[in-house]
Image (cartoon, rainbow, N blue to C red; front, side, top):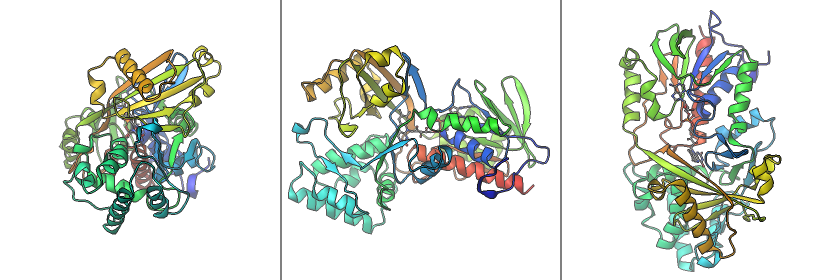
Length: 462
Ligand SMILES: Cc1cc2nc3c(=O)[nH]c(=O)nc-3n(C[C@H](O)[C@H](O)[C@H](O)COP(=O)(O)OP(=O)(O)OC[C@H]3O[C@@H](n4cnc5c(N)ncnc54)[C@H](O)[C@@H]3O)c2cc1C
């Protein structure tokens, strides 16, 4: 058996597997990490598919994603995991391009900005200095603001909102550049989004060459991590159990009892990788008495959630978006993504043969989508695009996916669980644990890997 990083295979004395509860990206990263170290894993997923909030959904034979997932070069944990999973190439499974804000309707006068291929801070300095649609004064004020943020090491007061943070910027810069970035990254309206977390993200993308680059998945989201992780688990003697909601019924220093699918089994340890709103259902009453479990449940219960709507539109005529991502005017669509790659991946599907263009329009934290049914929302987005570009084609195919609990609301002062390590045999994993990050793939992957490593170490020590 091949060992990752030359480590010995830690194994519970009785050869019992570790239970991973939840097959989203955090659970899959944990399962990959354990299996790669020779630890057998039983991965329980409550639904019929792995991937959680970042997964493929098949519609009319097309492998579309449940939402547009944009990563950045600074997401080190995700990049290095994908590097290990997909054969150690640069940015495997992803397409890299420079951070840019390109208005979909250039004539609208909305600001346009593109980073240069220089190390930070010059990539962003040059981007602002060359930005279109801003006056000289606006550019100077923006550069001063960015320099002050850097001097403060990207720290902000814990109770401040993004809107309050952006108050010091010229309005067009705040509303046309930074507020849309904050809304997309935190999936929380800027009036009640945490400036601390946003500033921390700005700090991360300013850390090294390429850190601010956009990374766009070049495979469907399930192929990117969940499916290869499942293959590795099975190849290393483990098991994937779908439609198997699991509950931790008791935990001791020597193992964890799991109830799932009508049966019980004793695991060597457990990684609980469910969403924060699902946490309360995973622990049986006896286990919730543990002070760290109680603390995590209390933090999770205080979280609120934000939706994200994705509207796919397909066209008979060829249609491409230069630069793959463009900024809309928020009425109601916020960003548009070129998704021709989906058609390329399903050349045999009848729908793919009938379409020459496919785009996805995103509405984050979407109050706009709450009171509209799918058909009405698609029609509203189609007329928005026609209003912004008179030559925009008529859609012949559409799909709307509204994720009601896409992310937790990343609000000022939001409390996270005080520890992910609940005793020696249980670890939490998930996108809600890192106080410096919003709900992201990166937060999920980093926590999953950390949990996998910690449990492997604990088992090796027994
Ligand atoms: C539309 C949309 C767009 C997004 N855009 C971006 C983006 O651009 N960039 C970015 O980085 N992030 C983005 N995100 C956020 C990102 O997808 C999430 O942060 C991440 O996928 C969360 O992973 P997770 O494993 O922590 O949780 P989840 O994906 O929620 O996984 C938890 C899993 O546990 C399962 N489960 C729950 N209870 C049980 C149980 N008792 N037993 C077994 N299984 C159970 C659930 O079914 C689920 O599969 C987006 C999310 C959405 C929905």
